Image 1 (spheres, helix red, strand yellow):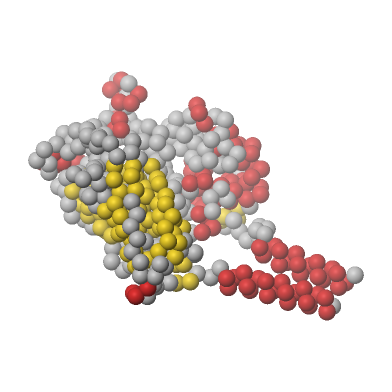
Image 2 (tube, chains in turn blue, orange):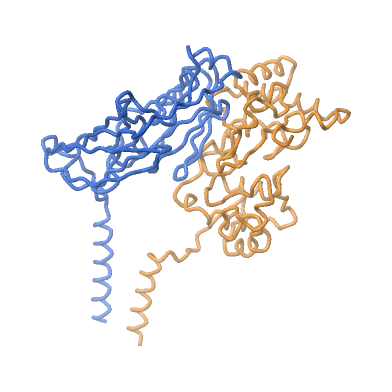
Length: 243
Length: 267
């Protein structure tokens, strides 16, 4: 009997310990200890030219462009900076959880293209989708890890959605206007950025630690690098992509 | 002896909490009938596995020869539902699809199976995706009473068919030959054709006016067909239903030659 009680107690203790150690720790880094990782993503080689998009079946789309729109799969700036690269912390946060920010991320349909083409937000953060065009679109994300939905959006009607699970990255399309292509990346933490037209990114408010940083591009693949951020440090990190 | 048995019993009890031994909780329910996944599994292996595959991923032996492709249950995305776009289907939605089959596809009607057998299949199909245990389906969409059709309603529906850009896929006359029709793929990348509304053939998810209202509200998830719940008010959706009914009535005139109704991708 005594043996049974002892085994039972240790089993219960083991179970309790397992549960307690897997509880999420909500973490907010102190301002004076926060570092950052900033850098530039460049494209090596001659930037490929986009091909012209034929929007002629919908005059509302054609009207929105002074010169015909071109495909935007690989966008390289004047200094060789690669735009639309998602740079994010892929390891090193040790299971910390973060509440989503209250302000929504905004995705616009303007001139029958998605702006921005690549957007990143947190899990359960609101995504406001806007139709600034004079024609109806349908918003159709095609996730693998999240729930798939597809909604028609007439001009000016707001749509608000969110994604519950991490996924890099969810392709978005409009079935009505088949050239439209975008990407939505969803993270469980706030340490992500999408490079601007000069290829720059800045992962701010990073607590001290060793991290794996991943850079993702829709056509040119993924690269990772490891970096250690000391208390209040701001090391630089660069990536180079090529075809 | 009793001490050892008690100990074994306690450890087994603790183990079963953590080893995923299926509980006797109901796995599906349609009406008053509970579904049993174990029985469903036996039925699946006899009737469903050759198209939908051993792992429920739509890759059965027959799948390469089928168009449209058999459903991948592991994705838990379904066309024919009564729930909003993005939501899981209700058990009754899956049951209805099994019972009715899907027109113009390889999915037959399984009405010859008993009601209990069909509910058991629903229970087993749900086991292919963890999403069914992680989430609950949303409340079904509300279908208000249908107002009477009228020439004005049909006219308003025709205008909405233009402004909602239905014609981009379904064509200006609803024949499924719109400018974007040839570009359409389902969410697995398989080419799909928009429905020819003039063809008079039955719709995939049910053929009544209420069924069309429901399809326009829920969208057919996994396909290019969207939900119009943010885009149109219920009265406007009924107008579109009436317009579609007028296209289908015109199509049922069998003196029209079939060659005018061949969708572009099959030419």
